[in-house]
Length: 158
Ligand code: RP5
Image: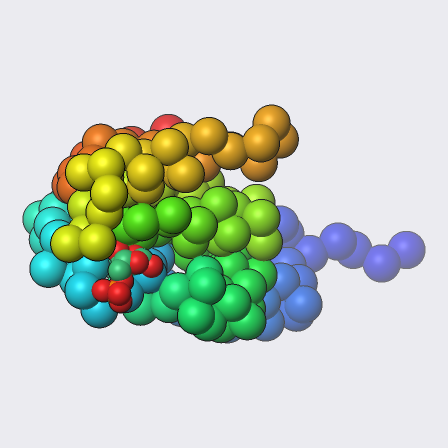
């Protein structure tokens, strides 16, 4: 009869391999926005996450101008280690909804004002908040990316 090894010395090679591939410094929050023109406002989300010590990355991608880039980013986000996505956009503000269509990760939308807004950001607010049932996007106030970062931190800590 073969003797069992003590539990602490048993190593599962497959599990060990998977752990060695996890990058502990991988960003946990992705901040995306529809245009470079959104960067100045959206920077407040990055600043808040920095203050809270939460790893994040920032990308510019438009749901309308770069639809394939957005789809690929959202589809690969979880596999890359991201846990929450913050998406800021102005005007018709499709970006948060399109990201949510391609990932199961929580998505927090930030409606933004723009020089071209006809309703002071209300257009973006409604585009982000009025998602069809089954595809949720959390929505913070207009031009309030800081709240998106605080909410992301609460989701990560939940
Ligand atoms: C949206 O259109 C962007 O999120 C931005 O808020 C707005 C205007 O974009 P630009 O014309 O300045 O690139 O897609």
